[in-house]
Length: 352
Image 1: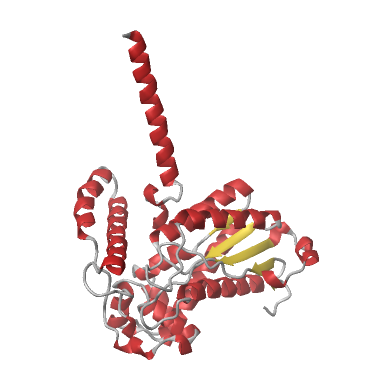
Image 2: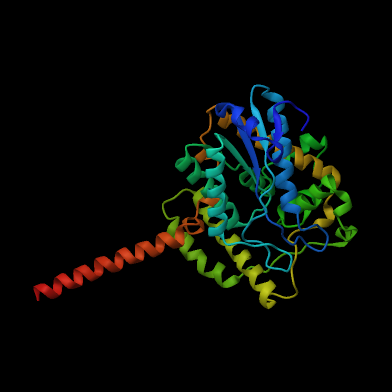
């Protein structure tokens, strides 16, 4: 933090904080938990990615905007949908949502008008919870709070950033690298490469011997989901159908992985998804640069007013059942329905 307009939140004093101009002050706030990442990566993998993205994006923004004040916060070690193995620190989605809302309220009272939440964990409910909290906080507290990391990560592992990666690498991706990025991602090609570039001493050399592996999908859900997806997407475009199918497949994998860790469903314990052996520090450095450049591009559009905070969202926000308030809303709807039925029944009895 060697720029006059770039600060660490924990190092500020009250006088400095009160002197900031809220209209041109931006906070970068990393949020991810500790989680098991195969036999070869540290528990803090997601946290490293969230923190580095916050620090590097913040540094570049401060450099490009000397008239702005940039504040980077300590990471919030909290997440949900963590791999259910000893060492993973998992909270409920509702807890994640409430804590982030509380933090947003504190940031708003401190005078921050722009808050960028960076994240390194792609669990479906974690991603949905972060994005929902950012939208709700923006409305409730009158701030601009958003999290670009999830959409960036999903685009990367779907192969939509191959051309950009190759430009940063200065060479074509090898077939093994392409397949490694596409075949699933948890402690595999992308994340192992990231840590090799960030903290290579924390990567166990065993990664070179780890071939492709992944969780067993819960096939009954896939079987049941197909007709439901067809019904819900009837009359819709192919893109909506594809998103619904991807969501169903993702949930089948999540449930299968949960059953694997608790009950041995599908065979031996699975701790990673993909192929770590194709990872390299060179690929990791390109991935790091790509993530930060895309994150910075989103931040620039938001502060210029070209993109609204609520428009910064990923496919994780599409399924209503993933929203952290869905269970409560469903319960309220059930109570309301029960009340209406009771009133109708009582009215009928009086008429009889």
